[in-house]
Length: 212
Image 1 (cartoon, helix red, strand yellow):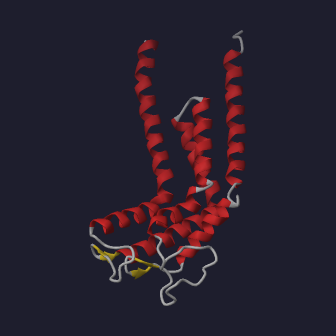
Image 2: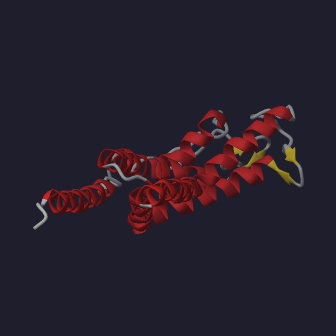
Image 3: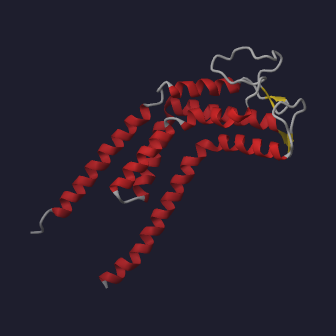
């Protein structure tokens, strides 16, 4: 009977861990939706035959590529600054909980937690600039200082429309990440690692304790 119960519980545990892993994947991807929108907009604009330095706004469906890019950059900038102000701590904590629920091995938990910490130390802040990087042109050069562009009447022109000054905001955000101002996430990882190791060693000591 005990063997049958253990055999039945194994698929249930795998199913539960699979659900936690899917939840972790979704939680990790949500902050990067603006980057996906930027890349998707560029992809469909290229299919439409639009030119990055074109004079006429490139239409995609019911909207235009410049408007989509501007809104995506604004969303990416909002996410990046909120993460820098402390949201990253809560987001990482939620990810760590899902890692603990989805993986049972100590090495897997610590490796995934470190990878997540490394990713959230860079990508939410440098991601928007990296996503827009292939669209830079003489009329749109993202920079943290917001210097005057060749075309003074347009702040940042891509696909025939003004993307707006937010492109300089994401440049400044990426610069702060490169300067190490987002390295606080590693302190969160160290705290998680200490707790995880303590729980692991404590559980091992209980199982290794002789039964009286």
